[in-house]
Image 1 (tube, one colour):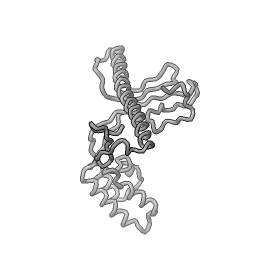
Image 2 (image 1 turned 135 degrees about the horizontal axis):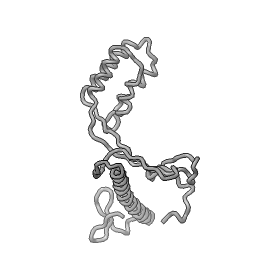
Image 3 (image 1 turned 90 degrees about the vertical axis):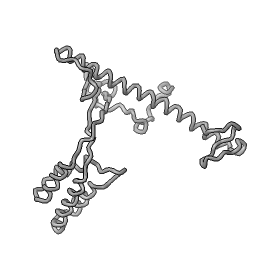
Image 4 (image 1 turned 90 degrees about the horizontal axis):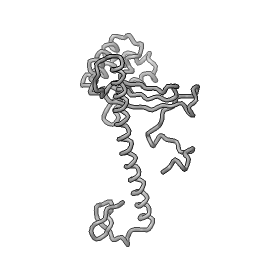
Length: 217
């Protein structure tokens, strides 16, 4: 809800205040609705954070129990990939570890070397392929897409300058850390032969057509 000062005046977007009588009814109703839904979203966000932390903790704890079963050294796991499945295989939990990849200045040199290669091949190379290669180096939100950069190494090109560029990319690649992801999957309606689907926890991705009223609190 919009902030009010000690006189009950409403704060505006320019950080000045206006008497409540000057606030249109529709704007007041809009403010109340936004406040209610934002509070609900924050509550849900908090619940998901707690659930996610607990899910990681319990999955890794189970992994440690397995280590005990096979007389392996018991450790307190906090990282690493894990896959757990229900007895009938209709539900699955996956913890995956992704490397956070960055590049140093040598990536710029690799781009220059690729440009040299493309300049030599201009008369013979497919223009569409050239465009795709160049777009790989596009910067979005201040970063290049590491996956796209590394995909260049899969091209079956043996030209010396291209191979030099790929070696430069290897030298430029740095592992800045890792990030853990947890995914929950199930077979729709619990059917053994059903399709395994991700359980979406991203509210923007959840379809609501079939949501039952009793499922809403």
